[in-house]
Length: 179
Image (cartoon, rainbow, N blue to C red; front, side, top):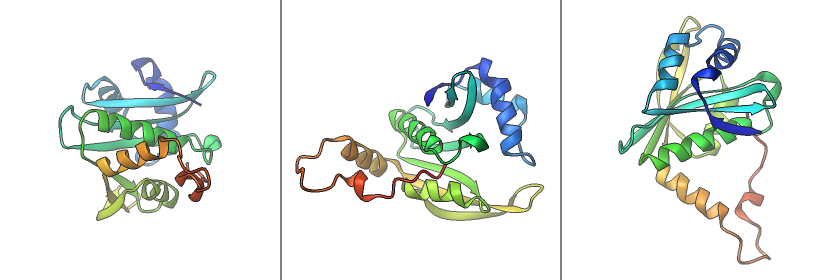
Protein backbone atom coordinates (compact mmCIF):
# COMPACT_ATOMS: atom_id res chain seq x y z
CA UNK A 1 0.00 0.00 0.00
CA UNK A 2 1.43 3.34 -1.06
CA UNK A 3 -0.34 6.56 -0.12
CA UNK A 4 0.64 9.83 -1.74
CA UNK A 5 -0.89 13.21 -2.52
CA UNK A 6 -2.94 13.08 -5.69
CA UNK A 7 -1.90 15.17 -8.67
CA UNK A 8 -3.66 16.32 -11.83
CA UNK A 9 -2.09 13.35 -13.64
CA UNK A 10 -4.20 11.03 -11.43
CA UNK A 11 -7.49 12.53 -12.65
CA UNK A 12 -8.30 9.88 -15.28
CA UNK A 13 -7.69 6.97 -12.88
CA UNK A 14 -9.61 8.70 -10.09
CA UNK A 15 -12.56 9.31 -12.42
CA UNK A 16 -12.57 5.65 -13.52
CA UNK A 17 -12.81 4.55 -9.90
CA UNK A 18 -15.31 7.33 -9.10
CA UNK A 19 -17.69 6.20 -11.86
CA UNK A 20 -17.32 2.54 -10.88
CA UNK A 21 -17.82 3.19 -7.17
CA UNK A 22 -20.66 5.71 -7.50
CA UNK A 23 -22.43 4.83 -10.76
CA UNK A 24 -25.58 6.88 -10.11
CA UNK A 25 -24.09 9.94 -8.42
CA UNK A 26 -20.45 10.22 -9.46
CA UNK A 27 -18.80 13.62 -9.37
CA UNK A 28 -18.13 15.23 -12.73
CA UNK A 29 -14.61 15.39 -14.06
CA UNK A 30 -14.72 19.20 -13.78
CA UNK A 31 -15.67 18.97 -10.08
CA UNK A 32 -12.89 16.50 -9.35
CA UNK A 33 -10.33 18.57 -11.28
CA UNK A 34 -11.29 21.63 -9.21
CA UNK A 35 -10.96 19.62 -5.98
CA UNK A 36 -7.50 18.37 -6.93
CA UNK A 37 -6.38 21.93 -7.72
CA UNK A 38 -7.85 23.58 -4.62
CA UNK A 39 -5.36 24.85 -2.01
CA UNK A 40 -8.04 24.21 0.63
CA UNK A 41 -8.16 20.47 0.17
CA UNK A 42 -5.92 17.48 -0.04
CA UNK A 43 -6.59 14.37 -2.06
CA UNK A 44 -4.63 11.20 -1.46
CA UNK A 45 -4.36 8.15 -3.68
CA UNK A 46 -3.63 4.57 -2.71
CA UNK A 47 -1.72 2.71 -5.34
CA UNK A 48 -0.09 -0.65 -5.79
CA UNK A 49 2.39 -0.80 -8.62
CA UNK A 50 0.77 1.20 -11.39
CA UNK A 51 -2.81 0.55 -10.25
CA UNK A 52 -4.86 3.12 -8.38
CA UNK A 53 -6.78 1.18 -5.72
CA UNK A 54 -8.35 4.06 -3.86
CA UNK A 55 -8.54 7.77 -3.25
CA UNK A 56 -9.94 10.15 -0.70
CA UNK A 57 -10.16 13.85 -0.13
CA UNK A 58 -10.58 16.33 2.69
CA UNK A 59 -11.47 20.01 2.54
CA UNK A 60 -9.60 21.66 5.40
CA UNK A 61 -8.96 25.37 5.13
CA UNK A 62 -5.82 26.33 7.08
CA UNK A 63 -6.86 27.70 10.48
CA UNK A 64 -10.57 26.99 10.08
CA UNK A 65 -12.30 25.23 12.95
CA UNK A 66 -13.80 22.44 10.90
CA UNK A 67 -13.03 20.23 7.93
CA UNK A 68 -15.04 17.94 5.66
CA UNK A 69 -14.20 14.51 4.35
CA UNK A 70 -15.27 14.93 0.73
CA UNK A 71 -15.02 11.36 -0.54
CA UNK A 72 -13.31 8.02 -0.10
CA UNK A 73 -13.44 5.21 -2.64
CA UNK A 74 -11.70 1.84 -2.73
CA UNK A 75 -11.72 -0.50 -5.74
CA UNK A 76 -14.02 -3.43 -5.03
CA UNK A 77 -11.24 -6.03 -5.29
CA UNK A 78 -9.11 -4.11 -2.76
CA UNK A 79 -11.77 -3.70 -0.05
CA UNK A 80 -11.49 -5.35 3.33
CA UNK A 81 -7.74 -4.86 3.75
CA UNK A 82 -7.61 -1.61 5.74
CA UNK A 83 -7.12 0.67 2.75
CA UNK A 84 -10.16 2.80 3.55
CA UNK A 85 -9.01 3.21 7.15
CA UNK A 86 -5.51 4.18 5.98
CA UNK A 87 -6.93 6.84 3.64
CA UNK A 88 -9.27 8.15 6.34
CA UNK A 89 -6.42 8.32 8.86
CA UNK A 90 -4.25 10.28 6.44
CA UNK A 91 -7.08 12.72 5.71
CA UNK A 92 -7.73 13.22 9.43
CA UNK A 93 -4.04 13.89 9.99
CA UNK A 94 -4.16 16.55 7.29
CA UNK A 95 -7.20 18.20 8.88
CA UNK A 96 -5.46 18.14 12.27
CA UNK A 97 -2.28 19.69 10.84
CA UNK A 98 -4.37 22.48 9.32
CA UNK A 99 -5.93 23.31 12.67
CA UNK A 100 -9.40 21.78 12.38
CA UNK A 101 -11.16 20.86 15.63
CA UNK A 102 -14.12 19.00 14.13
CA UNK A 103 -14.47 16.92 10.98
CA UNK A 104 -17.78 16.31 9.24
CA UNK A 105 -18.85 13.90 6.52
CA UNK A 106 -21.92 12.53 4.82
CA UNK A 107 -22.33 8.85 4.07
CA UNK A 108 -25.08 7.00 2.28
CA UNK A 109 -27.50 5.40 4.71
CA UNK A 110 -27.30 2.22 2.63
CA UNK A 111 -23.52 1.88 3.14
CA UNK A 112 -23.14 0.13 6.52
CA UNK A 113 -19.49 -0.79 5.89
CA UNK A 114 -18.43 2.85 5.50
CA UNK A 115 -20.65 3.94 8.38
CA UNK A 116 -19.04 1.32 10.64
CA UNK A 117 -15.55 2.45 9.61
CA UNK A 118 -16.35 6.06 10.48
CA UNK A 119 -17.95 5.10 13.79
CA UNK A 120 -14.92 2.97 14.70
CA UNK A 121 -12.75 6.08 14.33
CA UNK A 122 -15.03 8.10 16.61
CA UNK A 123 -17.51 9.73 14.22
CA UNK A 124 -21.04 10.04 15.56
CA UNK A 125 -24.28 10.61 13.69
CA UNK A 126 -25.59 14.14 14.19
CA UNK A 127 -28.29 14.40 11.49
CA UNK A 128 -29.89 12.86 8.43
CA UNK A 129 -30.58 14.47 5.09
CA UNK A 130 -33.61 12.72 3.59
CA UNK A 131 -33.32 11.61 -0.03
CA UNK A 132 -29.97 13.43 -0.36
CA UNK A 133 -28.40 10.98 -2.83
CA UNK A 134 -30.20 11.19 -6.15
CA UNK A 135 -31.49 9.58 -8.24
CA UNK A 136 -31.54 6.76 -5.67
CA UNK A 137 -33.58 8.57 -2.96
CA UNK A 138 -31.07 7.48 -0.30
CA UNK A 139 -30.64 9.45 2.91
CA UNK A 140 -27.31 10.97 3.88
CA UNK A 141 -26.11 10.26 7.40
CA UNK A 142 -24.26 13.36 8.64
CA UNK A 143 -21.44 12.45 11.02
CA UNK A 144 -19.06 14.49 13.16
CA UNK A 145 -15.69 13.73 14.75
CA UNK A 146 -14.02 15.57 17.64
CA UNK A 147 -10.61 15.76 15.97
CA UNK A 148 -8.70 16.73 19.11
CA UNK A 149 -9.96 13.61 20.91
CA UNK A 150 -9.16 11.47 17.85
CA UNK A 151 -5.64 12.91 17.62
CA UNK A 152 -5.04 12.31 21.35
CA UNK A 153 -6.15 8.68 20.99
CA UNK A 154 -3.97 8.23 17.90
CA UNK A 155 -0.95 9.68 19.74
CA UNK A 156 -1.57 7.43 22.74
CA UNK A 157 -1.78 4.37 20.50
CA UNK A 158 1.58 5.28 18.93
CA UNK A 159 3.35 5.48 22.31
CA UNK A 160 5.22 2.35 23.40
CA UNK A 161 3.56 0.43 26.22
CA UNK A 162 5.38 0.77 29.56
CA UNK A 163 3.66 -2.14 31.27
CA UNK A 164 4.38 -5.23 29.20
CA UNK A 165 1.88 -7.28 31.24
CA UNK A 166 -1.04 -5.12 30.08
CA UNK A 167 -2.29 -5.44 26.51
CA UNK A 168 -1.63 -2.54 24.17
CA UNK A 169 -4.88 -0.62 23.48
CA UNK A 170 -4.77 -1.69 19.84
CA UNK A 171 -4.72 -5.34 20.91
CA UNK A 172 -8.05 -5.00 22.68
CA UNK A 173 -9.88 -3.75 19.60
CA UNK A 174 -11.18 -5.94 16.79
CA UNK A 175 -8.62 -5.15 14.10
CA UNK A 176 -10.79 -6.07 11.15
CA UNK A 177 -10.78 -3.30 8.56
CA UNK A 178 -14.08 -2.29 7.03
CA UNK A 179 -12.73 -0.90 3.79
